[in-house]
Length: 268
Image 1 (cartoon, helix red, strand yellow):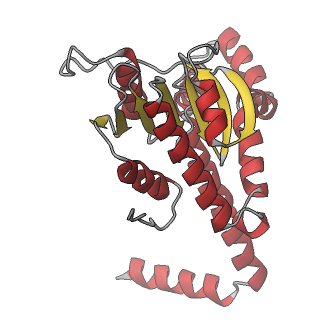
Image 2: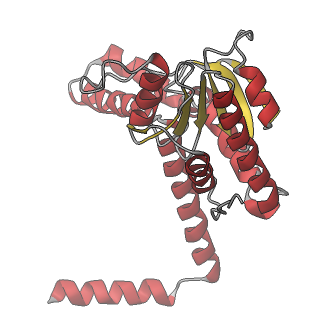
């Protein structure tokens, strides 16, 4: 009972002395912590953070057991921790700042433009299938795929059906790899994806399909696969493959991936 009374008294004291600036301060700190957690999720940097945590525990142990040399090394390490973090996570920090700068409040990309991009991707996939070009098209979502794939040639190009078709033309040097679509642009071409290690997969699946499944087992990306042999289209997400997709299936999946309302096209 005394504990409850003390807690209530302290809480009342804190609330009665809370300023408007304190509320703003708390909200800003919460937003920063939230963005850092999102960055960790997107970048797959949990392993590096785990390594820093292990070093921190080792530092404490070195103090307890008076391991002077180890303690001196780790003390020097943590005294420069800010610089080390900036070096280790420079790519992630750069993307995070770019993401803040591309917030919808400051973005000039309209829904009509995004719809145009979706239709261009769908057209590029269908045209590649019709011409028998094998293709791998990765649509990145929340989780960055950089840590899971071997990036190819940097493109940073506007999306067009003609460009997608030309990349996967059999005479181009990048046709065997995948293209990575990020933030409404073709970021990279000629990328190589990790092959799935799932023993239950059909033994007849080709390398492209295994690579698409392998990437979607590790990330939330959506991958479109065009078979060079059968000219069929497969949609891969969450480690599962949905074969023999039609144009309507491709369009619907793309609209959902870009967070747009699906608009069916009825042919007469």
